[in-house]
Image (cartoon, rainbow, N blue to C red; front, side, top):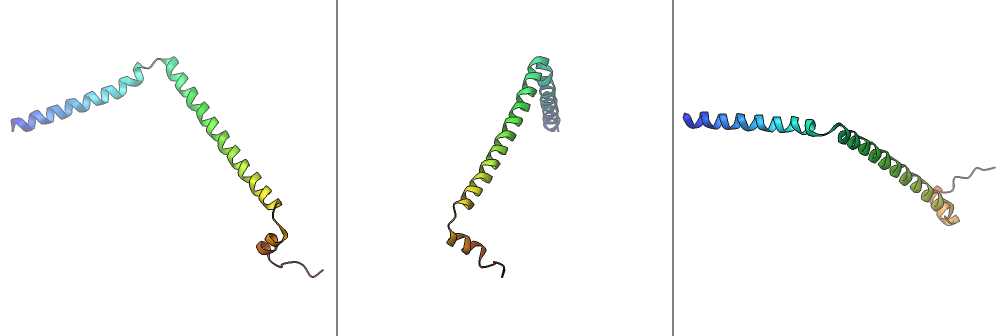
Length: 86
């Protein structure tokens, strides 16, 4: 019985310590450091978004170039004989 109480006290005290560490970490950061981290995060998000847009634009360009460089046989094979009668 005494062992169970000791174990529960140890678990409770360790849980409190973990909660205090999580709270104090943000408190320990200086306002300037926190602002710099947020700004850096925003810059990274913008940079990643720009890279994604450039990648999409490159893929579109490559598709257009591929379509442009197809031979008549490839185009006929892809689209078939769907020409109009007139």
